[in-house]
Length: 235
Image (cartoon, rainbow, N blue to C red):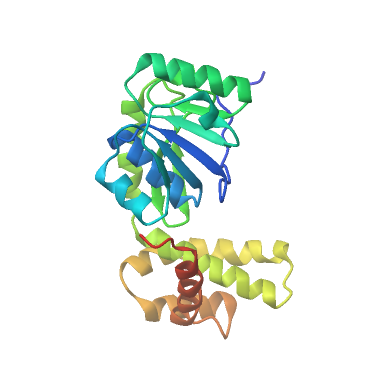
């Protein structure tokens, strides 16, 4: 018997995709910031805008249209998020998005959405999503806080290190299937805890035991930091 789910879990690539946020208050601002973190091309439509949105618009990081929403705002958009307390407007945006087959989220109104946004734990490239399918956002928030305690900021550096190791292995024509036991060994050696303890010498020892020569912790992290700095948007 199939255990049915209300929503299909997916990680959505929105890099350079046109995304619309309707509403310029605190909630809309938070939605914009998350979209920018995912490198989306963001337009905000709202008669009023927060100070942060004004600064983003002034730096040409978003397009800000200071007026009320009209249906044509949806043209060419990949997704829309409506973050207002105007129920009539929320309903209208949901209906209009349906006409254009656009992904639509209405903040705090799961019944009007064709996708909902989970609670997130973000540690660099580690993103843990928690959803109660709209039944209890408060419980999702509680789980998120529990996970934040379990997975600290050291996991961001841990994934940078794993990514750098993977790239280096691939450069030497290792077959991806051959990498699995190596990474399993690294994970089981609890490198994240060593990173938390700032024990670079111990990390180097683990890397040598598992991978051999040529995998120094600081060298690998330096290479990955250069790539990360290229991806950051300037704000």
